[in-house]
Amino acid sequence: MRPVPLPFQDAPESEGVFADIDSAINSVFAPVNFWANEIIFWSPGWFPMPWIVAWLLIAAIVITLYLGFIQFRGLKIATEVIRGKFSSPDDPGEIPHFQALTSAVSGTVGLGNIAGVGAAVTIGGPGATFWMVLAGLLGMATKFAECTLGVKYRTVFADGTVSGGPFKYLPVAFGKFPKFLSVGLTGLFAVAILFFGVAGGNMFQANQTYSQAVEVTGGPGESFLDNSAASIIFGLVLATIIGLVIIGGIKSIGKVTSTLVPFMGGVYVLACFIVILGNVTQVPAAIGTIVSGAFNPDALTGGFVGVVIVGLQRAAFSNEAGLGSAPIAHSAVKTRRPVSEGFVALFEPFIDTVIICTFTALTIVIADTEFWNTTREELAADSSYDYGGGVAVTSDAFESVISWFPIVLAVAVALFAVSTLITWSYYGNKAVNYLFGESKTVTTLYRIVFLFFTVAGTVLGFGEVLGFADAFLFVCGFVNLLGVYFLLPTIKREMNEYIADRKSGKLYQLGVEDKDKDIPADQI
Image (cartoon, rainbow, N blue to C red; front, side, top):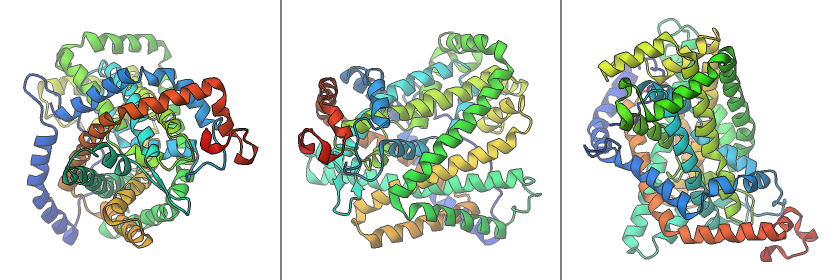
């Protein structure tokens, strides 16, 4: 079984010379994309789950057990850390815990939460929601582990800027490997992050933002934006907005996402609440359908194995736990204790999968529209049935209660896309710095190239390129988690020491300025 498809809004087709460029580049990448998907998403016939998804889920289970279900035991501590109880302005780093969290969340909360979940509950049925939530809860432990390492092995430069994430801890984890293998694996990780950052984290997001703008202004063929000149202007405006944000680095990104993420998440969840409250009498039955569908799925889902795989895959693709992207943002946090950010990172899959993905699924199940039920029947009969993708299912569910929801959806898509674009610009930047060195010249050139492809994303489709980038990203999951396994003892030691210091009261000294501390900062 291939990953749950994520079709969204088809962009207006490229015209003239742009169509020729699009076609030429896609023809080159088509065979590369085919074989990349065949290898990365290969699954054995006896268990139709891609090996890379199984790798991510097995790691989540192992880490959960090894760290003693820290995602449940550590929630109170995580809340205290975010509130700043154990932080002071003197801590090394660039951004506070909350901004580090929102920066990372903005890279995962996006179009997949709308389109991907719609596809999941259509293909896998309501029961897929249960397994999606379970995988999200397990993924919290993975985020805890990788983000702790991202901070522990980071480099803090003299000017206060930070460079961290897998680029720093993977060489340590692979220290006993031959040098060529250690450097090669870390380099492969960096190339994959960079490629996806420019393509999937940039061009695709720009493309979808433009597509939604065309849709709400009349649609293809009718909108004043549906032409090459308008698409270029739109791309230039979008690139200018993004450029103004990313020029300030992670501090600027953190400030923007700390406002944007709560706002866009709040608007979307509020819309879900309106649909749910409009059908409030059906809530108990809907929850019962989700639970019963998880263990006793109907004939349309492909049986028990089918519904489990769809739900688990959706969570894995949504929260990106284990892929190694989030530790890059979390490593910029202002803290003296690396594991503190691990506790904060627990909330990332919780927000992305347990809350937003679940609310989307619950909205669809409660609305129970004729379109959703008909689509499920058609897909059961013909898996290639074109129903418009998961977004059509999600939009239809909302529209059953909120007639003007397509406008809200367009705004949500734009906000989700822009926030994802901003964060992935930073991830790609750090990959470039690892590959070519930490310098202002390298960073400036990277940002210029990144913004060029933002404009290109509104003009060109590059479908095969984006498909390859999406598959290539999951190579990061293999390399990153291999490194995390080697460093699990270090994570556990840091975690136990932190919990013990909190219990003794020593940790609270971190919440006061250095001049007022009873214990020297380097001893806490």
